[in-house]
Image (cartoon, rainbow, N blue to C red; front, side, top):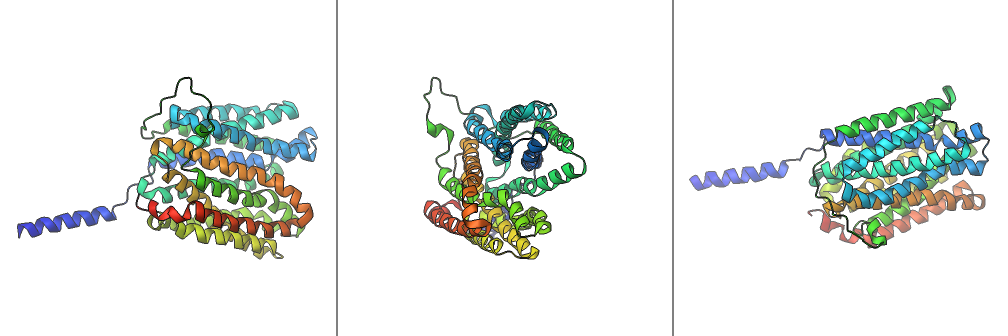
Length: 410
């Protein structure tokens, strides 16, 4: 009888342990997500307004105005490459404080009349510091998320970027239309102040820092995490395709006389991602990435087909929802997998590798697709990108999909 009682108690303990979910919504997780939201909100707000500002304030040409906007992405890429390696030696919080402090300083410089070339320098420096700070936030959040809920946690954390993508352009256009460009700089400055103050309150878990080698020779492998490289390559392909949405959907909506629907495009995209994350994140943690990623890629491709055939506002917004279910979830699932496959001490480098691939795709896409649009038109470009997305699905299968099941219980 005693043996039976002991056995029953053990079984109950095992059952309760199997049903136990480690706490995700901690103070540090919430604060880090808000810091990332504030940083990226300022980033997307300025991305959509800087070209107009350069033309209005400094009589910049169209090409120079585009350079003022895009130089930020180059700076962010430089910042991520540096921070991805350095964060292992410096630590996530210290790296974040450095980045957030310099973002605060650089954002103030927008108020000074430094001329067109001065503005270009400010944009580049701002990009570098954002790259440093957001690499640090990604590293910190990976450390505070329980390993058993990594997909769910990264999914919710990446909503800070999704929300910034959706809300930032809306706020930017509203401010310059109703108040003026100075209000855009004030808003960005306030966001930088919030991110700095919240960064001071973070208490991430202590992780053993790597010792910086003395007199080490340069090696390209020091700037990327090889375990995260395969899935990050997939992110490059998907981001390349999605760059056509970020850069050209507004012009496309104007061309097909769907401006009102076009103004709501990113809002519908963001809401769709927000509603789907509570399902896709936990599903990945339980069943693996494949059960989410394959349907997401198909949704992404189908969304591109729908947008290429849009002749009514509702069709354009249906495409936005399909892209939210598709690309919006691809982004977070691949980031979670890049971190999951990497040793804990190299999480910063894995996060940097992922974002370098993302930035390269978003940065190179508009440059190359800009040559395609005069030949194929917007509709033809979106149809051709369906092939790129489906090729990315094949690439995913061979580079990661075949081995994903092994990671579910790891």
